[in-house]
Amino acid sequence: MFIKIERLQEKDTGALFEFETVNRAFFETQVPSRGDNYYVFEHFKSILVDLLQEQEDETSFFYLIKNELNTIVGRINLVDINREKNIGFIGYRIRETFLKKGIATKALKLMLEKAPSLNVSEIHAKTTYNKIGSQKVLEHNGFLQDLDIHVQITFIMFGNLK
Image (cartoon, rainbow, N blue to C red; front, side):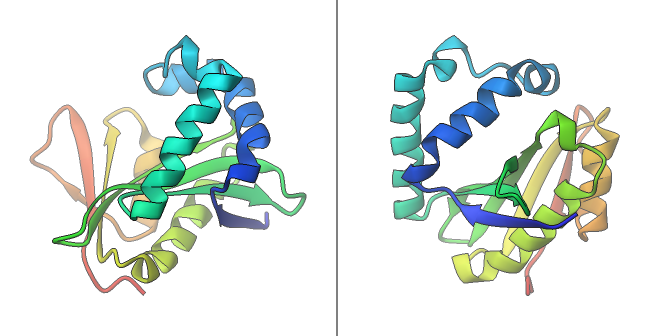
């Protein structure tokens, strides 16, 4: 399946809101809820303004994962960037109807290719012990597991990102 990642822009507000609301129930089985206000369009728009400011400040980067029809099939974000060390933290979520199609693996590969142009040379990721699919996505992209963590599994990819 063809996918691309596109940097989040204000024009994406409606489509991203639809993506989040349609997938809310599924996402909330995977991660803690973002709360009811997140799903109120006016509030969502204000959150998006804050995210776009983070991008402008280069403390986080937010990307939409889109298919050949330009449909949002997921999100992938590089956040909490430490500019002294050029370290960032990766996170992603895939629309339920597009799971198990290799989208997360491909999107992460694209983000890793983009990271050097964002001045990020080390990326960390966390997942829980029971999210085997996420662990495989990270491992397929060269992340190494930190075995000292017991509740959450931490993956780290060091330097030399291409």
